[in-house]
Length: 528
Image (cartoon, rainbow, N blue to C red; front, top):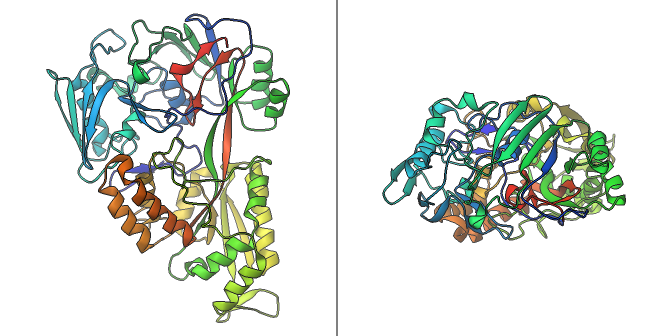
């Protein structure tokens, strides 16, 4: 997670944040004879221990996927990208404010009523930078202030600057009663549930058990938990092969499989729900004095490598073309900003672009200009896995064969952001996965580190003009401007998204829908 100076935040590594919004994937998974009933137990594999479960203190993906079973949200986002009522039965918004009417009858874990004052208190708590809540900027604009009227059950939140997706982002805000904000650390291994389940047992490193709450009826579009399983157990299983084996023999009902074990599950005719994330994206360091500050060089480097081949290697033969700049589906703005804007692989065209820009090969076969060779410092994250390492080796070889002098560096995730901020690189394999296009703005415009988070040092006037227009327009009404802005980045090859990857949530004996945050609780059923 990278903190933005104006209080906004964005996800800086693939799936670093798995906050969920509703999106159906590749097909429901179920295959046994049990009928769907509101009883029974479902066991879901976690690929790592979530650590603290406190919703005000975590952005760990496993914790967020678990917490969505315990905490309700004001709104949900449907598979079509449209807002759905949840705890808020209706709302209105401008570019800098939103008003929500809280549904009557919503309760906290102890049975007390969730009031408008409770919701306003949470907005104020998360929006106050002094509280250091990692959700600031993702769910509540930094510096936002909220007021409540319990008589009309309304909450009004106002941001200090334009926040065009202020309503959409509340789909990611786990709701608490005001009394539970007084000691967030107390929820590290406990729950203060406002959602369909509450935590009954926590055994760190092994399992977390949730039991169904009575009376829950404020899910997306008024969904209840009547037909949901009586108990959900999250089992910590760090080895994917082990998880696949347990799924096949019925000891698990849901597991996330990314690698080759999925082939065994496919052969056994288990179905899965898929959630796509941006997996392959090239960033170019455009700071003064760096070789990629020249658009002709960027264009040559893009055309000199076979991006489709890189995508196939990185995704183990299962690439898919990106349409967006990393906004997770269902993206609020759905126009394609990538297709037609990235030039195809063509080493001849790459050479012509460099030649036209005054480059020529020297006696050693390296492109040079003004006595300086075309030297490319390439960086990628070790956390992207061995397939990206292999794809990176291929990219380095193709650039070398083209006539560039390439040095590659694999960086561990703990040091990746500081390495990018340090500026000693020319090209980086670095996807950004976010939820709304405004969360990308600090990374692609404004000051470079340490004053800001414009890691590539991009100064694209067409992007900035489009953003200015889009930020002044609430919600999806600004999509035309966002599309124009992001297309400008890709056309100039400031940022080059080139492949998606699908996270597969396999199920046996259950049906559900899934998204980037995991299983969507309101859709989980035993049977099929």
